[in-house]
Length: 113
Length: 112
Image (cartoon, rainbow over all chains, first blue to last red; front, side, top):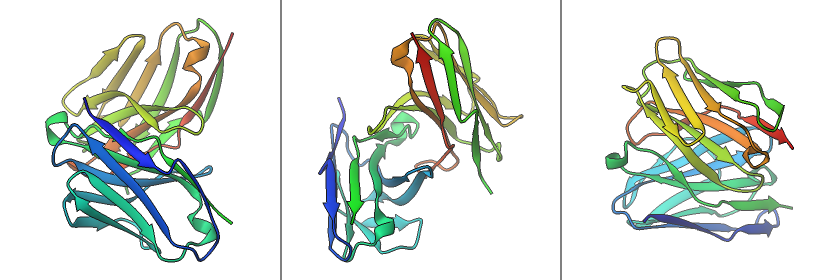
């Protein structure tokens, strides 16, 4: 069966510090991978998605970046965090054989102070 | 512009009631529609996926319907239980492998 992992679960970082969030998927090959952010009272916003290694599409211009160094690994990064980067970050995956049904990880709660 | 709307934003019902959650979408050219459940502080759990060619899907006490022509989907929960208390989100997919467009969710509270 497929599983998706995210870490860390919670993170408190000062403004201006770097960020690295990691997401890994097990039990599937060549998945589409997604990073979403859920800010309080604002719903879910897609940040990045990837259809393959090294292929990243950005949905929203911001100080965040994403990378996919391996087939089932997706990393969200920032060089300098802003207060507005606080939120709940969710990673998700899908495959065409599953009609692109998206499955979400447990999320990372980021608080920028 | 592709938008998804959920009404009501919050709903409180006594245990045992049958209930319906509503979702509407502005562009009928969807690929599929998903319903999710989110518990406080947790990730999203996929409940049901309806492909654009389907009219409904069922899983246990849950039934989701899709009417593309009217731009609407409903999630029916039978014999509600306190454990059903959560936020329910619907999301539309327009491009294969692309992004989901989410509604703002309906926060459901089932009182014992």
